[in-house]
Length: 255
Ligand SMILES: [Zn+2]
Image (cartoon, rainbow, N blue to C red; front, side, top):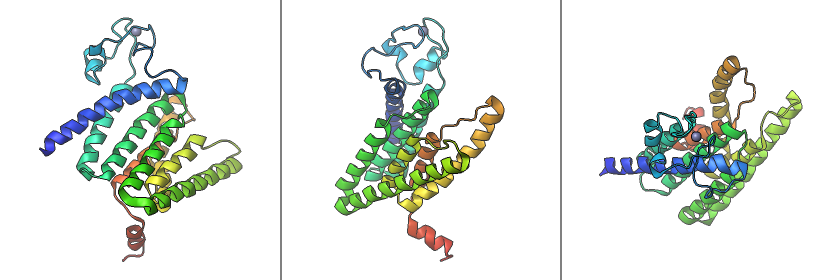
């Protein structure tokens, strides 16, 4: 039975990944998410149903539009598979639990934020605030008013901390180092995790971003690296590690 659920969550992730790719490539351009139907960005060729199956279509078409042979971005099939795996891992780690819902929301945000940030260098507010509201609702329903209020407060604290880090960076480097979206993403971190764990998120995200930025800097002379995807990956890792503040404090004190 277990393996059946894992496969089911994997397929669910593929399908949602495909849908989120449409959202992430249309919402930043203020396009409707329903009309026009999915089409090739280059020649406008309308996609038939068999060209819309996640990953499978990409492989059958050998990564090209059937009409104009324009290469399709690898980002799409890659993010679909990543979300399929993340949904399956979420189920595996949490089982049927309210935490599974949060894991699925965070994984979905990872795809939305990464695709829109890499494609347009921006993250629409909706990709951050809708998940924040959903997580708060889940906490309210499953854990009660007290936890809900604490999470809300934690989100606010994390927002303020990141805002101060942003202002401090601007003061030191005399240029923008963090985007407004990075500050807003910390609200999501705050409502999911505690403020102390959110600080770990920032540190972890920086450590992951550093080698990637250096690699891109050397290979493409690219010096603007979106930080948003790293922050979401940081939130995901800390959430999946199921850490809590007290156990870390005890660990640090050698207890
Ligand atoms: Zn085409």
